[in-house]
Length: 262
Picture 1 (cartoon, helix red, strand yellow):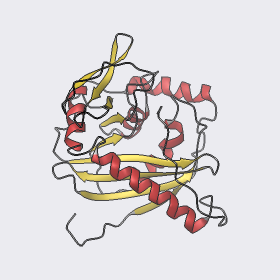
Picture 2 (cartoon, helix red, strand yellow):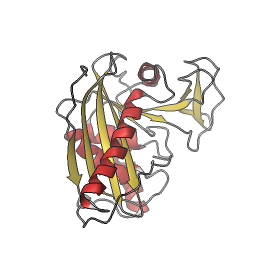
Picture 3 (cartoon, one colour):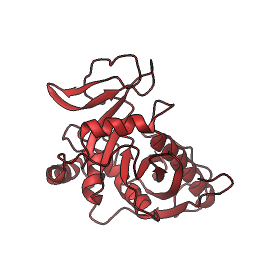
């Protein structure tokens, strides 16, 4: 973005969709139904080309509010070219492996509010690195048709050997003997991130995108930007309307980072 310009941010208010799963059994059934639609035999867009969009959420279960952000970067320069947010009700209890059901409605609304195609979507979470091989990145990819990857801060329930110390070192992320992703060192000597395919992107390409998006920090710039924006959106929404997006003003909601396990 050129110096001196202010980027406009669109905010959308979201309600829980009719028919949204309310039990763990219903949510798992949806995952089982949709996971067969994941496309894993496409390489995806080349790193450093087109657009890359980071998505992330901040929420507080006590107050029942979730904010999502979508931040579009120029993949070559990592400059922010568009952004949007959405605020709504937490749509599902906290259950590891089912966190997509807490986040998908607001994340979809934020993506829909963008004024341009998002290109590759980078989720702060998991894709195929998931107990049912259908984490948030895969869920979003199937619902939108967009190429998606997951870049997580923790390995969830999976195992890995520590990759080499230099930046760019990697090792398989394993469910038993099955490779579900990779531990990728984005910064020398710093804990790796955990990359998995979401939809319509190969694992080699997903790792290359992750390194291209993290030239200086451990986390991709797409995730860093989306994290900051969703936290700000949550605070601004509550400052304006109170502890619930449609309620009376009751004070400021503390921003809470989402736990691992999408």
